Image (cartoon, rainbow, N blue to C red; front, side, top):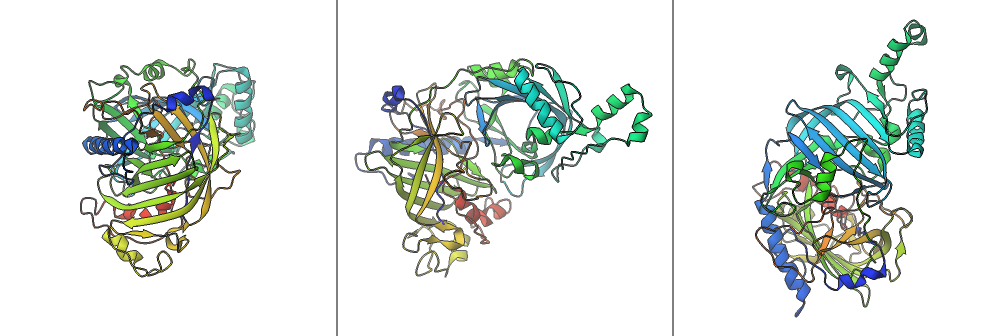
Length: 558
């Protein structure tokens, strides 16, 4: 079935004028993703951007093994499903220990700090990921996690949540700006995260008889050394199980040096499943703190502590005006080690849309495996999201879809299946229409279908108009109108008023420009073993190629 999942933003009329001068973003491949319309200025600019982005992706250097030592910080307010709003400041030491700060907020602009988590522990690199090309797998152990509330109300709420997980653990009223231990485990007792740790509300303690024989000090120390109450806070750090350190070409925030980025594993879209989920994609990259020159937000995050969190300025709520063409600004990731670029066009007059999604076998988006297209209409009336402030709910109708297979192994596996195309014939590079067959059952594509999306529009400091669409469910579970996404994917950039491109500005960057987890147009429930004809990633990527069809259903078509 043709899964179309897209998220678009929200806002106020005052900024409509800004949209007329939209700026373009970078895309992940040198070829045009949509057929340019004669005289279509946006299409020409997007084609040029596509080539520039493809070059930047090819020039990105992945460090193997990753050099993690140092401090890595967020470039803006990040949104996780829930919704949860946070910024991160992660420090890795030479002795393979770490100290992670997560600043949590009550709004989408990170202006209202709620609490800060500080996690300490050790990590160990295990080797290349066999699921996600270009990534390194790791194991980690937590030895201590503390929570610091930034108001009396939040302190009360945190104490109640911890007490619900570990009854009796909170014995006194929690106060703001004080550190409270929510996990403390001796290293030898820390569970191996190779199998995600099970949070046990009956945290280890000795029986009552032996406890009564101990002094108050000894008992207090025993409890503090052997507790795990993270479940009540939905706090997991499995993002450390997958990582990649890379150097992007020169560009903002420091044009003198390449960008050193740390990409950590994605977080499950459903908070209740995060504790058992092992990441296979990436979330928003972190920037190395010593590259914070010119990035005020990075500087603020790097110097802040758990008792003094950073405060950002509120973002304006822009109207969800989608008209025009939007493209990816870098090679994007999907669960199960898939990579893609997106290109979307919206027509305000008749409320129609068209999208093209190119999938690749490698993290540089240079080895194409298939291209999927979809088109249809979107709702004429948009509703402000009741769950995500600043977001807009929009319904997208998928009325037509097509598929172009670019991998010989994939074409061979689909050969003869008449559930996708009447004649069951697939040839490499030949576009096949899926509309007449009402989709493609083996790939989980259904046509027609309605996708219920969350959308947000923003303008960054460089004048780029950004389109953020909702994060799809990690397991591609279908959503109804009341189950819309509560987080965003990586933003797309609009192709209007494109500024001059310079070799030193290969990436039109926004502080929130790397919401890693884009999903557009998913193909669900496909289980077709595929054999890639691309030799470069023949061994490393064979698994992800085999699952490309599975995740095509994760492609957000809109």
